[in-house]
Image (cartoon, rainbow over all chains, first blue to last red; front, side, top):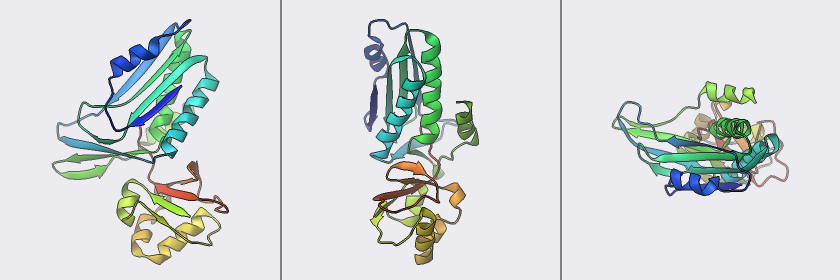
Length: 145
Length: 81
């Protein structure tokens, strides 16, 4: 598995192609999160994180996924720093022999990364800056697993 | 121990981290001690239900013991993904 936490951007297509190789692979699922500018006013999104704990927390979540589903591999890339609308924020990819495991594990990884990986988003518009509130629905989503 | 603050907790307290010498037995004791110290702490810790805490980089609860702990971090609920 690979866990990458970085300020730099990444090429989701190239990452996915590189990840998809391997004997016996039958299914690859990926998700890419992109900075959303809901009403066309976003100037920048800043993502703060907790160096050290971030990598540990993500590795723990990926370990759980690997233990739970028949995965051949998993990849998590998550950025921090200053991002613009349309920039890729993060990416999850899973691969397995059959699609059910890859889909379920990717869904699980996303739910846990949202609420259990120490990142905090702050949006700046012409009106000022505000921290993005965690959604109750995101916390509730963990109960699915 | 090293006490760290993230996101709006960091902004309210005014520093990203600091060394704190304390005899606090639990995280909750540390919160009470800091809150009594200065208004900026009291303001950040006014509603601990809005906060999360990690002890030595593991998420835990406010009743967690602090014996032998090196690092405590306070932050709002995470917004990754």
